[in-house]
Length: 368
View 1 (cartoon, rainbow, N blue to C red):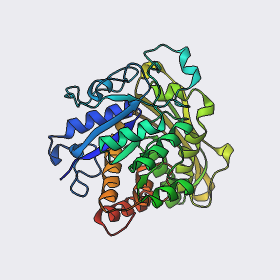
View 2 (cartoon, helix red, strand yellow):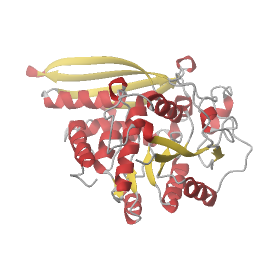
View 3 (cartoon, rainbow, N blue to C red):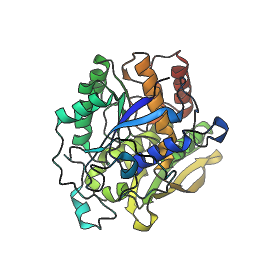
């Protein structure tokens, strides 16, 4: 079976964890596999993925082999697999647009981006690189708030004739106009905004659904998150948080049915950057409600997890589902995988419904 060839834009912590993880699992068996919802999808295993194109704008990564770039600052995630052989895939200079927040220049270089002096790539160059690489799809790992850049690379994916897995909260798959464009080109798209394996949003969603199913009236809730990676530093600019807050809030609200909370009674979003946490994310969830007899109750939860590896297994599944769609010549949004793997899909379902739809897609009994 052929390898799944991927291009990646944004070689940050998430891309680093993904690439290291692929190497870590390449020669392992199913009983050694930790962290996957599926060991095999359509005959493809985690080790059947290879990076054939990569884009970034940081001076410490551009021009380097991908095997080296994943360990360059400001990446700070815990290593999974350090002994990655050279891949012969160079990180190309991308297009900056709104990909770098202005406030980041006020912080130490070890924590932030150092913009490369290389000439920025234009659309034609990115398209040419994707075509020549033989990539099946492009993964978007741009920083939160990179709205213009996200659309730039979505355009490049369309013109290059490759699928798109949109892991960040720019609304591409969930925008009907973009969905139609991918469908018209018969190219699959999965998005938007990747869920973690066991992260703040998936836990909050499950608890919200549990409240609803058990007849508990939810009155108010918050989710507060702190971390020390570049993503949290980037999000100190609250102007870049609009889509992220919408994505995370809608993901939880969607589990409450018609009795959604007013804006003043729900607060979900990144809260602060704590440098020494590095890639560790700490989440605090509080939910206040009423049980039988209108008696009050509340729930508090603290979750601590390495942020970037937490989405790695989910992305590996998304990649393989996207490849299945390519093999089957299916274009447009993959609704089941998008709902199961992403926080802000075009259509929200409970996680159990989304899981069932995804299993049907994998089995070939559902188109998308």
